[in-house]
Length: 159
Image 1 (cartoon, helix red, strand yellow):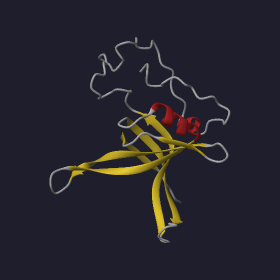
Image 2 (cartoon, rainbow, N blue to C red; image 1 turned 90 degrees about the horizontal axis):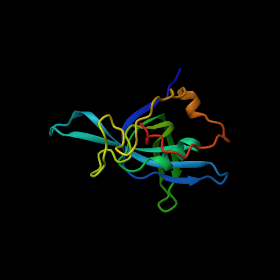
Image 3 (cartoon, rainbow, N blue to C red; image 1 turned 90 degrees about the vertical axis):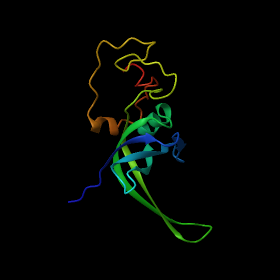
Image 4 (cartoon, one colour; image 1 turned 120 degrees about the vertical axis):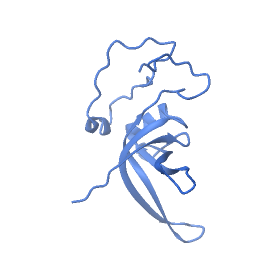
């Protein structure tokens, strides 16, 4: 039996970079910083940096709604890629997280100067929603149909 599962919570270190394969499949790349729980010998918390790759609807979501500094949860798997560097001729290896699911954990503007937020986290200019439907299971979120239209509304706007 084997298992390759990674779950991380951290902040985006850069805006996602969206590209498309030659077949038109969306792919987004971004990085996150994750603080460690323990302090080093100098009494400081260290930070680990991870490269993340998201495909299809997850890539579209990341590209449309997430920016540098946003807090996210990433659920995915660790993947290794190897290639030969054309300039030096040396073999190179990259380790990255392939995201099956990415969720934003804060709202646009949280923690930024001038962001006006009412108590409870709702933006000052919007009323809180009356009720909220439950989210679909993780399996349904990670494997949407190819022709399923992307909801263009910010999913964090009314929380």
